[in-house]
Image (cartoon, one colour):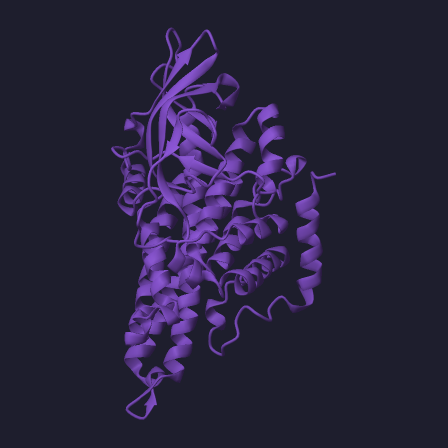
Length: 418
């Protein structure tokens, strides 16, 4: 009975919103060209509407306070599960919403208009859930996914290490097989882990050490529970942005993980990690899009209202050119991201390259949009009251994580000359 609960709830909410789906998206004259609903199906329009309404009512009014206090909004986070947003890509038989990658980007974009850091944590949770759904055994799917879809369990993804960021394959964390207990003993440290200490389970990539096995020295993925002996967490990092969510090291000291908690096949972890990152790059691009949309709308409205030299600054051609450039970056970024999501959904052979291209260009463009919106606000943009500065700080890291934008260029460039 729980298998289709979230899907049915979304459909019910869509029907309730259908007759007013455009009412709260674009409210200012002239902004129709950057309407995020352009090109979407009826269902996708309503996914956006639901998420945007939630962002406006449940996230945006409180985001500055969460950011200032460094407080993750657990109660608000759980409300997202009621909309089916914590198992977006997961199949229905275990409680998921079974939506597409494109659907997911639409939802994350809308939520990010309220708070990038909160939404980014949700994207990571969804990435972990989708990996378990795609690569997990029947027992793992049945045990973990209903709880992940309801947020009774929260998940974090652990790939990066203090000495291996872009060069993920050089990781030093090891998983040594113990034949007597049919378990793996994990040792190492993961760095910059979103949700560390807060999440209940961790998908940990580790180099396998096992005698007489083709998987020896290859990377495997392990599902590790928070309360496992030997698992601990570093201090909460003090960051430029994403202050709302905890970021810590995950420290493994002789952590014993039974073989039943290996995700997928031993030695296949790196492929799983890269597969997960294709979607993760789209998700983080969507987070940047939501921030850019919000900042752009604020900038347009502010320039119309701000009067200098006895006229609105929006009447200055220099300002109009800035706004035009921002609109162009916003529209083209959205088109590129959504096309890449379609390619990933369809299993295209060039999906990885397009996801890398989208991540690089979208996050670069959207940071520029947020930064220019701050500039158009002048000194007021630098004040927390106007929220622009929070978006600028939050989207900056999107050019670094899920693979730096320089690595994204390398992925694309390498494919062009191979």
